[in-house]
Length: 388
Image 1 (cartoon, rainbow, N blue to C red):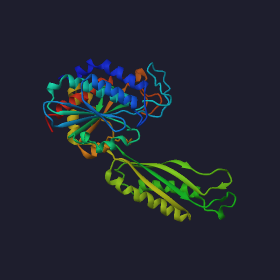
Image 2: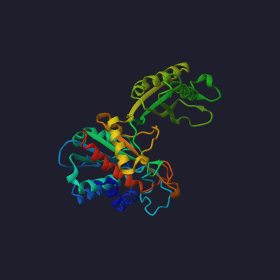
Image 3: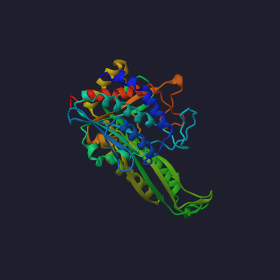
Image 4: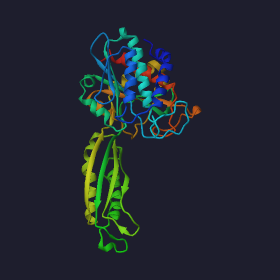
């Protein structure tokens, strides 16, 4: 099976699908029309499937052997972003946009499904096509942990389209690729009063300013500088007038790290700083640490197979190195349970103004990249089926 040539033959099929999905984006857990379209395509390909409890689909293509079971995953939800580019296939759902490339992820996986189903006789494995909802809320993949078909997979592989790499380049390095993504939610509780008489109040705003500053000492003085760690307070709500000291301040923040060991100790360290700082300023506090997705860590053997797959379809020049990045990706829930790999497939083409970041209101991708992604899905299966 010549994966790249076969993917090239399906280029227009994938472009048409991508533009269909792009016109009709749906938010997390609302991907009903998206799920319906995926099922229609699977029906055309005669690939049996089961719908997930709310949205999303798991399809199964059985080759000559039941095992190994290789799980190929694509996320299907869009973002609450208002699209500003006047593309011919611009979003018809006002305020919702496929600004993270999930429209192409679905299209590449359906393209790979079409190729593999057309060459079923060359498969000595079972392939599971996982169309996963709600990645943008970093919860969709977590719900898959209770799905018997998904968890039967021996290895997982996913693609994220990547506008930071030129079209034609693919990064599949082993080790951490995305950080864990946790949330801190806390309240500093003081005692309100008149702004002109602060001595009669307990000022939660001043206390909060100290808390925010002191939290940065965790990263600079308590974490090994060789370990990436971010603690950012990103939302502050308090007060109603220029001369009233409020009773409390509510804050939200994000916590990121590539290291599971660092992640384990951060909740206690953050609460200690909040508690001691509030004590210094005579304030009380409430605190909640909300665990989100773990770090996305590529398995060494899976990454090595992915590297060979890239070389096979694009040659040595197609394999590029890209630094791990402090975004969050809920595919990590699956990689915690089974080996696998997440690939960054370059889609940047500055000549066509396809150069904007993920989640940007002007994001667009070079559709030629979808040929590379679909070919990579197929080639990864061909290599993996005989090695695990």
